Length: 294
Length: 274
Image (cartoon, rainbow over all chains, first blue to last red; front, side, top):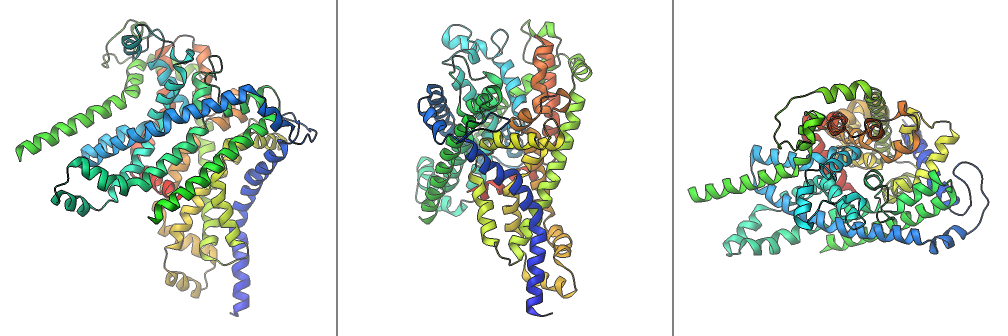
């Protein structure tokens, strides 16, 4: 077979092989990406045509107090979840990696299991755990505050409690990654440290922590991106309330588009989230690259 | 030596207790679901002391749970099959063939990681509505077909297969499709299973998108459907927990059976994201 003919065959095969993916990717991903950008410059309703209005939606966002409340709540939620879940996952991973055999498998299964549950199952279970009248955790809350608290109906409790539920739900993923990271640390480094008379505390800070850092950084950034996309738990547990104290950006996008019929404005909100996450992703990539070079 | 052993045992015990506390909400849901509504509100203990299945019977006979199961199974299976097939084919081309636009395509797939999918929901909803797919299985499925990580993982695994094996099949007159389905796929059943399970679980659990695209109760998937039952039950803790556990049963059982694959898939797909 001539070289040219073979080359042509290769290109044709590549075309056939990539076509299905490219088709799906273009129609259901690239096109909507373009569409959401375009919509954000119009006053379109959810269904139907709109007029080009330039940056008016973005200007409106700057004067939208609810939008800043949403952004602030997103940030607050990030503070409540990202570092705490990473610390908890690290403690669990360190403990689990000290166990052996079946015991390790059992404990890991128990810690990981919530991660595979659908979000609405998680919120049903926690709504019952924290039920104002009969919730099994209410005596605990009463012991601290003196009385039962309707947590998802209380502006001070709602975000921290949604954070607790979220950490319980998603933590298993982080545990798994950190355990994988711990397994990659060579055993002889610990032995060398032990021979040098290092205390367990020193061994952690001098050996485990620096060598685990790439995985820890990965967990932190994946969590940051994940938690910025908060919607399901808020919608199901508090619906953004009370008094907008758990109102978040995607909640506002949802309301504007699907309840107030403002497709254009909702797209502008989506674009802000889009930009925030792209910036975070790029920073993450740079950060990990710097970390990897060391 | 015995002191060390005792210390290890004590440590294991403490970790096990912590794990049991962690999983307590799920256990408590089970306990609740097996009691009569009257006993639940009368402060019974935390141990399973009653095996009353009436809540389960009630949920299965009065709610649309069986239909939601069907919708969830169908949409998750179809999504998983298409995601794996299209992803595998594209990855094979990216990994083994030289063609114009190859680098650009790969960069596009990698870059698409950064896009937060919910930001596209408004546009995807409009598209689905234009296509007349609101309240249909395909409306649920199509936007969920974008799983770039599958392409990237497959590409990495295909990259690792030695060229000599490829040449042998080509000399026998086999084409690229033969190579993919007779050589590259069979060599990667393990990763295929892992990706299939994680894609299936992710699709099964997706809430936001099916919640937007489906408004008719008989088209809902499990995670969306069970949120509709709230109102019709009134105060019914045992039934709510039975409902939650029936909804969770497939993924819990699936996870327990395919545990190793799930773990593997989570690690591999996250390693790529870094």
